[in-house]
Amino acid sequence: MLMLMHKPKHSIRFTIGLVVLLFGLSGILLSAVTGHIYQTLLLDRQKEAFKSFAERKAGFIQTEIVTRTTELGLSAQATQGFRKAMASKDTALISAQLDERFRSFYVSTKLVDLESLHLLDLDFNVIGRSFNDEEHQGEKHEGEEELACPIFLSEAQQRVGASRLKVVSELCVYEDDSVIAVLIPVGGIRLKGYLLAVVDPSHSFLDMEVDMGIPLVLHDYGSGKTYDTDSWPVSTESDQVLVWEYILMGSRNIPAYNFKFASDISGLQAQINDTRTLLLSAATVVTLLFILISLFILRRTMLLPLETLKKHLLKIKKDKSLLGKEIHVEGNIEMYDLAEGFNSMSMELHDLYGSLEDMAFTDTLTGLPNRALFNDRIEQAARNARRNNMPYALMVLDLNKFKIVNDTLGHHVGDELLCEVAKRLKSCVRESDTIARIGGDEFAVILNDAGVQKTAIVVAKKMIERVGMKMLIEGHTVDTGISVGIALYSKSKEDSETLLRQADAAMYHAKKNDLGYMCFSDINKPSSLDAFVI
Image (cartoon, rainbow, N blue to C red; front, side, top):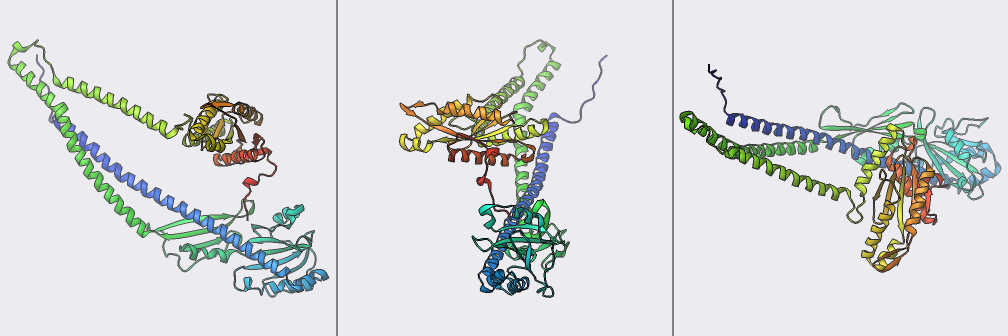
């Protein structure tokens, strides 16, 4: 008994059209979501840019305060009255001279918000003092007193030699107030003591509002005071206002000030919205065009062959003599050709992407990984070290005499030299390690699971030996060498950028002193990493 099948309501044409339409709508939705993500990322980048600028501006202000305070202290020493007071060792006379500093140009014009001055002897005992508060000026100093930033002063007292003649400063929290302490030597080369100036930088930091052109609220973590400005917006909840913060850290990594800024981004928001609307409109038009083209292609490649098969089946239904007759359904062949063409195209795209990936992550001259791939590998090594407790060593190598080879024998010989050096360096490391060319004549090596300094030194010596062997290039005997800087991973310096800077500094130290190799931990005075710290 024949079972009558229920006839579907929708044709394959409708089903394919619906699927294509859903794909098109998903594309439009993806465009809208992408626009929102782009807006969020753009605002985040804007905040980061503001924070970076605020950090540089705060550093500049601190440097300016220290410079002006130092000038104030030096000008005090230049007066005859101050020198006489120092010679007499009369506490009252010294304090009177210090009182005069509060009537100087820097203090009276608020270029330096000076809170107190203390004159110390070589043992850091107070022999004179003065305060911004006139009620306390002229007070007789009796006994010991706690000075600002005691840890800073203790460290300064431990200095020896010429370092005692340097002006040092520090931002710290003292007596529930964030201050900058500046220690100025007195007496020049014949050191007689120190002048300790305690400065309140709050009002100087408030000037950042004018310099940056952005409303500012400043919070002092030490005193708990908050300095509001009249230009601060009434409401910061609107998407037309971008609020961001920057925390200025004092000594011992203790927060000193919180800068909160509110930037009017109504113009930027308008541009973003216009751009999103334009992109969404373009995506809609392109999607609709894609739907029409897709339906046309599907009709030619699938629907027409199926129509041909359907007509043939209807003929068989009417004429049973057609049963058993070989038929060739063009649709099957066309779909096979389509699949074959797609597979061929997919393989071509695979090859193309592979070539593009090689171009993006491989040095075209030496065939080694380039800086982009090296940065990715060093981040992988850092993550592996943190998760699996497998420290690694980082080495930065610089080729000696490379400029001489380029200048005397030509760039072609220089390129051949780099290729030969790359081969020799590659033979010195394991397959699991990474060696990359990160600059003109600069290479870098990641020794995985090699956190012991001795292991890294063995590899460095091996590299120096092999590269140091004479090379015959283009009929020229080339004698060259390398300088190697080594830095070892540790939990205290997980940042890969810090590790790379340390290895680079060690390399420059080795190159400068003709040492062959140098470990960062063995540099007695790593002057290449010193920075001016307030």
